[in-house]
Length: 395
Image (tube, rainbow, N blue to C red; front, side):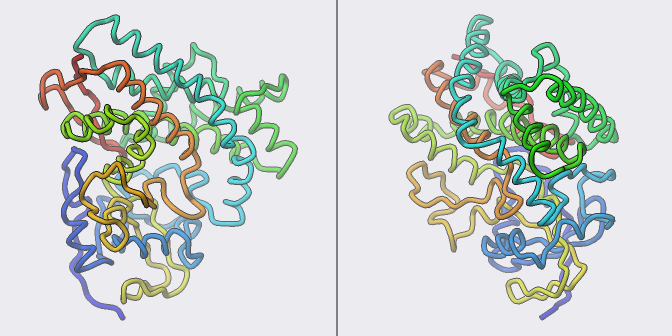
């Protein structure tokens, strides 16, 4: 079935906080496949139901490769650099296989102690400078940058530049491709060094896997090591640390629950991921390569579909009391990191860092509070991620 539908302006609102626009819930129950228009690109479908979202993310009839060269629905005029995200199997599978050889669960678990040490060092410095302090500037930003740089084997003196690149890659500025070129050039030099002098760090493992296995291009290797891991290992964590802390500080019953039982931290991270969106809008449309029916509506071949992960994560068909934070939720199959072939490459790393961050903040600051209420919180704008760019806290 096809029908004429209202075309809605998208994103639905500019609300910068941790809540999602109620339009998602309305659409999920009354118009689960809606027509939307982003600031740039063609009109597209927006899926908000959990099962539809999973279908679009896994069904080979929806293609990311088919989006290349199209006027993709997007938030900024310039096309987002996509790298591995813009591929379908089997090309995508080759890159995932390479990354999987290097970014193993064992490697991620092996750096947990390093992550803990790094977290302690930054919070030591924060305490030494005295209360109040900006949790974003003094911890949330430098912590994941230092972790990923140690993991990749990036020299300490170059980490300030990595911060500029990570912020630039998620901006809506026209400088995007300049940052990509700079990052690729830098990582290319590091790759060449690893070939001359092999190392045991993650970049060394990626180079070894690339050279001894599938003959991937240098561009593909740099896409994984640079943009892929940098964005997932840094931007997700640096944005969600203040998001999560803000949620806990403004919902004291949740903070009290975690302080009383630290064993809930891993489940709390999953629930916070489910409830708090990372992006202001859905991105990276899939294009139908043949007619597909979703929720009784036919998506025609050649039409783009965006999936709302926050909408899916609050679907009452999947989650009991979906609008409520529940750190004791037994089943939490959220799709905050995506689903299927394009499930986030750095999800294990991000989870580990978020768990370490929450544990350490709870341990170090038993009386943590907002220093100046909401007046001490400012929110990001003009970025592809949403969260505080300042979170003034006292202890």
